[in-house]
Length: 92
Ligand SMILES: [Zn+2]
Image (cartoon, rainbow, N blue to C red; front, side, top):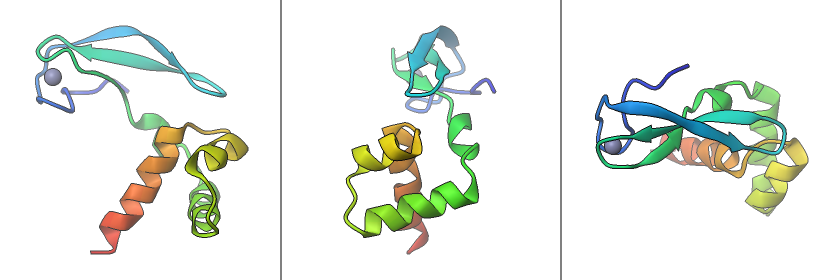
C-alpha cells in the first residue's frame, strides 16, 4: 500500500526510500521530498490479528514492557505503541 501523503506535512511528493528492517520482515520506507520526513506505511499494523491486539493490551496491563511485548509477539515496537495509543484514544 502506497501512502497518499506525508504524515507530517500532508505533501503528495513522496518517494520510496529503501526498507526498514523489522524483527520478522522488511517494510517499505518512504521519504517526503517536502519536509524530509521518513515514514513507513501503517499497513503492517492492520495485519495483526484481533488475538494479538488483545494480547498486547493484556500484557501491557500486566506491566509488560512495550519492548518485551514486541519481541514476544514478533512485531515492531511501533506496532505495539500504535495499538496501545489507539486504545487510549478510544477511552475518551
Ligand atoms: Zn512532509
